[in-house]
Amino acid sequence: MRIDVVTIFPEVFPGPLGVSVLGRAQARGLLELVVWDLRDFAEDRHRTVDDYPYGGGAGMVMKPEPFVRAVEAIQRAASAGTTGPDSALRVLLASPQGRLFTQAQARALARLPRLVLLCGRYEGVDDRVADLVGAEEVSIGDYVLAGGELAAMVIIEAVGRLLPGAVGDEASVTEESFSTGLLDFPHYTRPPEIRGRRVPDVLLSGDHDAIRRWRKREAVRRTLARRPDLIDEASLDEESRALLRELRERRA
Ligand code: SAM
Image (cartoon, rainbow, N blue to C red; front, side, top):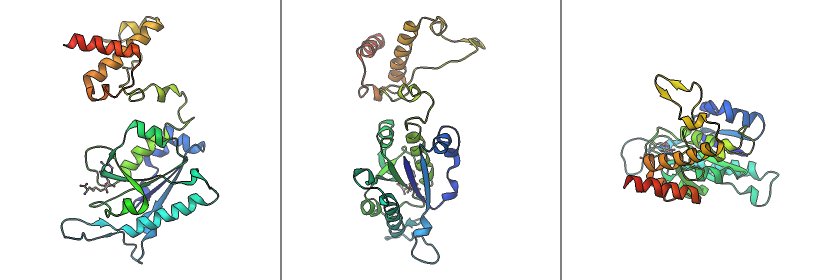
């Protein structure tokens, strides 16, 4: 997969994306990260990318032309040598006003051959940009960052680790929080006891079926306690549904 990022701070990449799972994915050619400096697409010799807001008020707004020109350049690079549906580019614009980014969306994006991420700064990007370049606005959470670069990194890491072969054991990304709509079960390692806190006995029992059932139950119990909003949307098997009924009856 190739991901193009457009930013006025190209020097912050790859940053954390250069190490561990994402670093290895790039070294092995599973992921190609291409970072573009938005200022290279400015139209004046001062490389201006922002301007005063129409209507007045605080701060500066990012100009539309450099984003349009950048996406056109990326589109040209994308279509060189590729034709057909794979050459269609998916463009995301980081914005606190966008659709909330989820694991389900990360999974869908990880199936694409290419992705473009646009990073805003200042008061944000001229509101016509998303429409002009066919971008979907995406938010990584209900808070406001100073710029879209960290949001882009979050999206790239969430997507990149799902690329086939990126993590050593595929089970790590198929049996984790949000994969079935539930939170993950709790994990423990040695020692079996630390400062009076013991690992649950069942995990030391060697009884694989009992461990499997305990983990399933804990995933349901945790989700119900911590993120009850997820439960109704989760795709639960019959065993998990029975556990949910039992836990709800106990709480009632
Ligand atoms: N004035 C905007 C508002 O109140 O909605 C906030 C602009 S913010 C200071 C500057 C840039 O940071 C945005 O254009 C966007 O690219 C990025 N950004 C900030 N918060 C974000 C979030 N939660 N998710 C994704 N991008 C975000």
